[in-house]
Length: 326
Image (tube, rainbow, N blue to C red; front, side):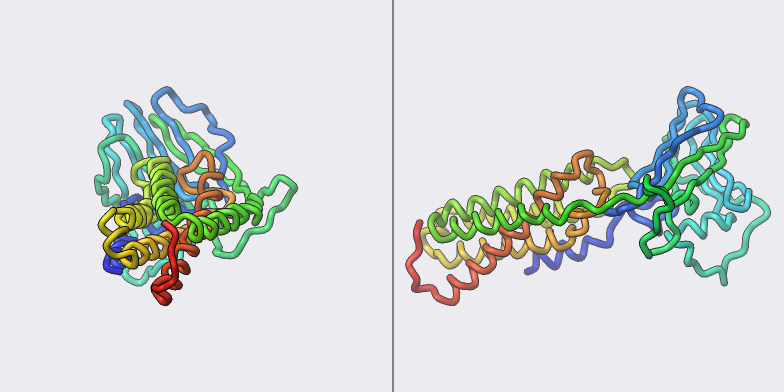
């Protein structure tokens, strides 16, 4: 229980970025950059991070400026890679919340830019309201392609005006059939819990280990600054440690109920991990994964195995005199 509480306490922690009122998460909307006119010079690239969450510019030896929504100086990167944001820009305030719901009462725009250095690596990543849907409600597509709206973001590259144009699309959710993997895992776990105890305990450990791998792929699949708290990794590590402890010979021989309790604890941790990541199963976009099927398969598997592990533990602790197969 202490491990679970400790992990939950880490959930609010996430790296800071420009416009940190938004975070990369599973979504059904995706922003696609479709043209940059005129073309960017060598050393400059622009992309969308997190489906529709951030616009990211990376430059080497080239200066880039990003005007705010009212044309005011907002963000700039000099040729040496120093990245600065204007704290006196209303855009800075607006970008601190995904839907622009901010308190203006204490803010006063400054006619003179108040520059603050935020990086020196030539990389800027900011939340831009023009490139995403400005409501928590699901947007409606205006054509068969899933188009929601078009967007244009002006930037200045080496003193030349450049327009970055693209389209926001809404995608269909993944099939509910992915949950059949969880059902299959549940049935397999039930069979093992009855017929092969050690095998069942080992399966819980393996499921946890794969959860660590999938979570790590999600985390490192995002660029630095867009990464959020690796919930799947943290809880899977805890589950794997607890499940591995249940396999220790001293617990298997000298106190079977200890092993059962540990295995049930690992199962409970798997359920929490899967529950916190449940949106990844059906969302069109899964953070950090080029192969989203990994999360769509494994999160239901974690649910299924974790559920059986918990129920198995409750039954065997409540009725300790029942015969158990090794």
